[in-house]
Amino acid sequence: MRIAILGDIHANLEALEAVLADARSHEVGGFACVGDVVGYNADPAACLEILRSMDCPVVKGNHDDAGGGNQSLDTMNPVAAEALEWTRCQLDEPQRQWLRRLRMVRQLGDFTIVHSTLDQPSSWIYVNDRFDAMSNFTYQFTPVCFYGHTHKPCVYVKSLVVRTLPPQHIIIQPGSQYFINVGSVGQPRDGDPRACYVVYDTAAHEVIFRRVAYDIERAQRKILAAGLPALLAERLTEGI
Ligand code: ZN
Image (cartoon, rainbow, N blue to C red; front, top):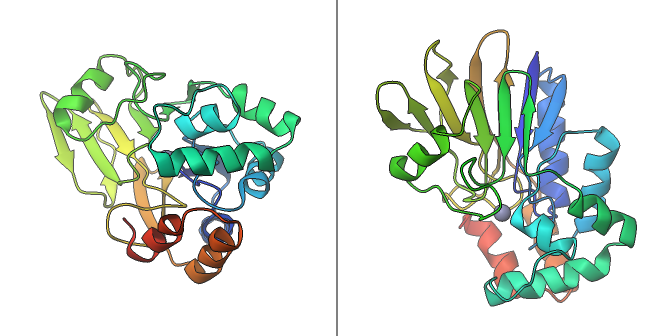
């Protein structure tokens, strides 16, 4: 079965729709989401309702937690906090409740999904190198775990030691464990503005990174029309 793993959608409807169309054209039969459905961009309710209607397993991201009203915005940077204040007002109470009720970690067959890291999933730690990844592997009990949070696609593989691999076609080797950042659908930060997600082929034991062009200008116009910070529109052009 081919499963599309999406993350850090961040209310970018144009990017989400392009990714779903791309996934369906690649014979994907299931979906999972590593969190941050809302925040930053202009379509939180529409993106949330699409995921809810797909009955897609979703884990909670820090923006979902804050957008649902659970988390103080004090620790967020000012731009993120402003967008989350706006996001809360765009959602009705059942939608905010859906966000609050998301689980932190889910095991789905032979893989796990988490937003940040399995060792401290509610601390929202950023995994930026293989040393950060080592702590995660202590709590990883499946061959593969998919995560997000940094918005930068990346692969860590643990055999005798933990190594970093570039985000490319990965063959899952028996006896090794993989901690795979699926990149961001709605706000990529690796210098490539195209939406990013992965396809996990559970029969072929392979993971394929996909980049999908979408209508960035339309997403930007909506951000500005909503009165959200202009920086949030500008960064989509560069993918930073
Ligand atoms: Zn995010």
